Amino acid sequence: MTAPRLDDVPLLPRPSRLRRLKEVPVLPSLITLGNLFFGFLALAKVADALRLAAPGAQFSAAVGYFELAAVLVFVAMVFDALDGRVARMTGQTTPFGAQLDSMADMVTFGVVPAFLGKVLVDWHAQVDTNRLLPLQPKLFYSAAAVYVCCAALRLARFNVETGSDEEDHREFKGLPSPAAAAVVCSLIALFCTRDDKTAELGQLLFAPRHFDWIVMAMPVVLVVCGLLMVSRVPFPHALSALMRKRRSLPMVAALLVLFVVAAVEWQLALAFCSLGYVVFGVLLAIFRLVVRRRLDDDDDGDTDFPARSLPSRN
Image (cartoon, rainbow, N blue to C red; front, top):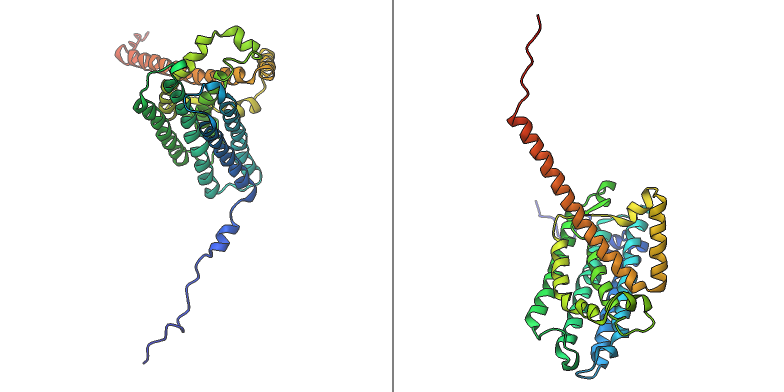
């Protein structure tokens, strides 16, 4: 009996790479790539500011670039909010889309805010005429690195723990990476209005030294936002909460005032909303912790002092 030749043995079918590419959801993927594109564009604008500014130049020469970079990050957030909803509406939720979304978020909401914050701090630590911070490059690198690493851990944990249930999308465990990026970028955009005479509301509420505090606190802001991303602090899904439930008239009036402020000075409104969101999540975690401890204390009290049975009547 002769052994069969290799040409006579039928090949086992294997999935074609072209077939796999045909399974990629087109519209949600394009929206996710829009998120990545605007995040990269924000990086490019800050790089242009560093390239075009002369050595030792004042920050006023780069204000427009930093403000535009912050705006581009918020534009990327719009694409990030749309891609998941479009995928669910069209029935195109795939593991490929989830992985692509995390990669785009890692760049836009992980690398870009850390880079913007570090360059802003370095700029005001090296210029002698307007030095706000001592020259500590290792500390600034460390603060930005903590933010980036925590963003990566946050996104990886989100992919592992989040399921397809609607309950998983109502509340986040830890600060979402877009919200952390919103805190950093909104503070940077607010600082860019320091010498802007047209920002009358900001000039009325804050003195120039208050704007300088933003730069001095930026390393701490990066570290705190990074640690909140990997924490278990509950943060509500703001967009879903506003769209699902009916709201009271005072709530609608407050949102209207916020929209008016945003139309007048969007930098101030974004900073107020992003910081308020973080503070709300922290206060919510403290409230739940206090309530849980009280319930545990009540349960311990019931077990320590059991109720005595009443004597029976004959």
